Image 1 (cartoon, rainbow, N blue to C red):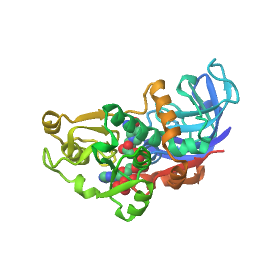
Image 2: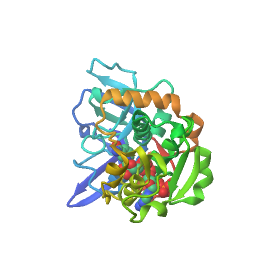
Image 3: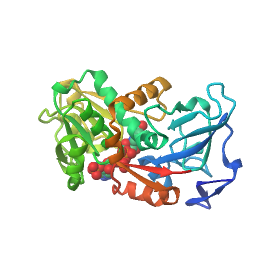
Image 4: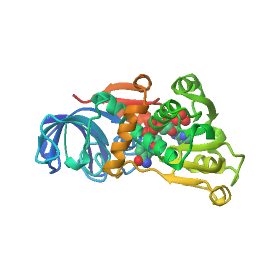
Length: 326
Ligand code: NDP
């Protein structure tokens, strides 16, 4: 038996409870990890509250990320004692995840814990931070340089947004942070934002094309915000779309793409190949200041995960939440 959160759905009643979990609940896989730290991402909030059908198999241990130590493996890539991180791959959705003391997964899903981070810091980054880096890499590979102009980051106080701001600022970009919490402006500026944009400026229906403002965009919000971001991106600029915190729809026209040559990049962290993950983690080791990461990290025990998951969906959490699973 081990401690963890278990989601059940019996007679249509969805429950997420901290309890002692039987080893038999863990799926068959070649590598067992003693989980030390996990985290709460937006998707974990959806899973813990049952607000969206993220969990596809019951009973399920939620938690799309974890960091810990290999305690059993038949995978030749790993040995007992190896320090590892897992992000995504459907873990916490279709395969038991990280909000428990033990996880059993395919060894090929694991990456070594980067030398520059502790297990706790790796979870402070988590899927949100690694996705932020995937967005930054997309803009960089597009050829956007700091001299090209401002980068807009939407959902600025969220996990993805906060890490994106910190990384972009370290790389020398001017960052415009769009937020529905302008009272957090000082915090966003301390992270590296130079301009604060009110969420309402972007979230209402806008024109097919507007004044050119952004060299690039990291969008975590979707819906009208993404449409307006595309409509106000400069000629040949790029938008990295990774989220739907404001809605899954995309009420846009083709105008920014065919009149301004704007490129829209879709960013997926869940099934990203190993080489992409390794590049993102390596770059996080170089381009994310630990002091900034610490400033956006809040620590909670496993017993608070369900309640804080609901807070996260309500947009009340700032930055990242790490969960002490040990
Ligand atoms: P958080 O909940 O930490 O942050 C989301 C932020 O979006 C909030 O803090 C808030 O920022 C803003 N926001 C919330 N509700 C609304 C709304 N109704 N309209 C506009 N803005 C809103 O989530 P994460 O940062 O972890 O994730 C952000 C998004 O990215 C999610 O949709 C998530 O599913 C997605 N995601 C996608 C991944 C992928 O692989 N593609 C991986 C990771 C995340 P503020 O208060 O500053 O306005």
